[in-house]
Length: 158
Image (cartoon, rainbow, N blue to C red; front, top):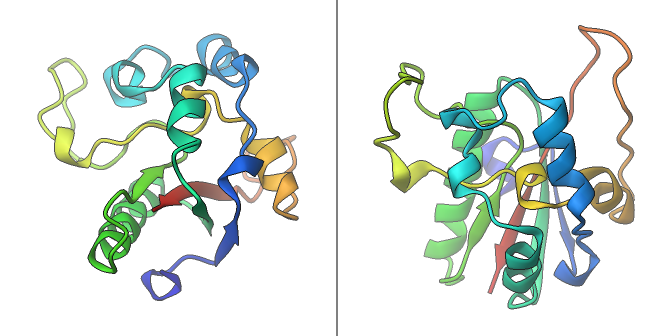
């Protein structure tokens, strides 16, 4: 997984993932992409569904990367594929931010790339700040444009 270009791949117990209604509210009331096609709103899980899914896994990796978003998300898909090929047949990834997989996405038309669409952690009720903090990572709110952004993804393994 590290060879795919992630800054870090931190193993942890999926029980340490923090799921809360707050995270989806932050998306709904704080993001310009909310309810647009590329925010995957129709593909997100409710916090209850997210928690139920996470509870079926015994292993996970917190993947750390950086923008650009599309590149990070393609790395996430490659990590999920690598885990599947390594025998983790239930490998599943939650990534950061609205979908940026298709560079020529037409936001006015329905998604035609469901094979590569994955839910975001935030949009599925995962409190990224609390989860990352539980893994010993530091994540802070950005005060100004241009500050360094850290991206995280959650790779569930079973």
